[in-house]
Structures are given as C-alpha cells and as structure tokens.
Length: 368
Image (cartoon, rainbow, N blue to C red):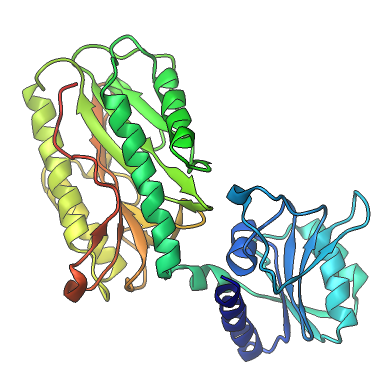
C-alpha cells in the first residue's frame, strides 16, 4: 500500500504546484487517512518541499481499525501535551524553505489559522480547497473491496435480525443489537448511528431510534452501515410486521421500489448526477409525493458516509466509473409512516456488467 499512498500524495502535490504552492497541509481526518494510511487523533499531514511528515500530538494508535501510517512517511510526535500539530507543521514547512502553504481552510478554525500565521509570518497561506475530496471520489479496487466486505457484514447483521422476534421490542433496542452484530461480524463499528423507525416513524431519513415498541401491522424501516478498514457503506430496507401488508402499504412500497430501481439503472459512467436523481424521483413525483421527498436521493460513500457526488436536483457534474454511491429514495407520510430503500452500488460501465450492487439483502416486501 505504500506505493498507493505515495501516488496519491504525488497527485495532490501536482495540483498544489499547478496552483502555485510548493507545500500543503492536510488537516481533515478522512483526507489525512487517505493520503497517509492513518489519521491519529488531531494529526495533520505536511506535504513539504523536501519531505512529507505526519505530525501527531501523540503516538499513532496501533489498532488495525485505525489504520497504520505509510511506512515511507516520517512521523513527528509532539514532545508534550497542549501542542497543535497544524501549528508545528506550519513551522516545519517554513523551515524547509517553502514560500507558500496550501491549507484546508474549510476544516481549520479561525483561531487555528491565526496561530499558524503567527508561527511563520512570512509564509503565504493559500486555500487548498476540496482538492483531496475530489481525489477521493474515484476509488481503486482495494477501496472498493473494503466497501464490499463492509456491505457483506451489514447484510449479515440485518439478515440475522430479521430472523428474530421483533414485536414488543423498542426501536432503540433493535438499533443497539444491529450495531453489536456489525462488530461481531468483523466491522470496525457502525458507519453512522443506526436508524430504526417503526409505525409513524418509519421512512424518515436519519430517524433517531426512540422507545416506541414494534407493533403488529407496522412498517419497520432500518438503515445501517458497517465501517471496515475505515470505509463506510450503507443499506436501508422496509418491512411489514406480523401481518399481510395493507393495500396502502403495498402501493407505497411498490412506488418507492420502482423509484429506487430507476435510480440504480440510471447509474453509468458519464451520467449526470441530476439525471440519476431525476430518474429516482420521477415515479414518486407523478404519484403526488413531491413534497414528501428528501433533498437528495443518493450520495457518495467511502472514508466518510456522505461524500461527493451528491444525487440531487441541482447537483453538478457527472459520474465516473469506480465511484461508489447510494441510491436511497423514500417517502414519509406524517402520522402514518413510510418506506425507504437504500443500496450501496459502484458505478461500472455496461461492458463490465453495469452498476455493481454491494448490498444484496432482498428488497421484497416481507411480512416478519
């Protein structure tokens, strides 16, 4: 992997040089991990004129889930508590003879930025912008493999839950059990707080579990994800509890399923992000549910659970091959409940079989 991290840093350095900066300071944790292999708490990565340094406030964590620093990197640990790795790295950049330093202004606080200026007043600080996030959009096969394993873990945890008795249990208890099962099957942990919604809470995006108990005839919506070696996937499914679904439940589920399938089928290299969103929304819009739809119908995943690209009506840009995204349309009807279906897929060309579905738990409307 050392060559992979070195190649990523080279690509970033080329962008910095093109923008007039000979050095860069990366502070956003996911970006540090992408370029360095690990992101110890508070660590920053300095791409210097003479050498690259991972500057840490303490020794890097040796747990596999936290990653391990690229062996070709120099690791500089601050001598005592209270120091700021970003400020130290700024001084080191000046010591290496850099005249300018590109920084992630969208991540740094004003106070931190001022401290960096004070330690090297002659160093010109410029904005690196979203350069690393842009590099992270297209994944290599090793990254996709981590997402694939995470999806298998999430599928397994969800499948086991569906085989258990659900009536009478609270949303909160079910969410905690799912997160425990993720870890039991090898995940670093949940990719985000697990959402379990029952009855009138079902179908809400990002619903936080409550003490409401599962009842006969409820819709049960579950959204969970696993983190594996830092990479995060997502799956969401909706079921009916105990009895045969009511007519309105079948109708709503079929609409959301058709919308989700249309979004999945629209995924292709070169497809406009807004067109994928439009494909997923069309069936729901025409059925009169436009006001009940979320702001977006999907997003990228990777070292963070919500990355670019965004699948939304005003989204700019087009999809590339090897970009993992979610497709997750849903409808929530206040006071009644709703349906959400969510998959993680990888954009692939038609010659390679089209979109690769990572989350494979059935999307059939099951009565549990």
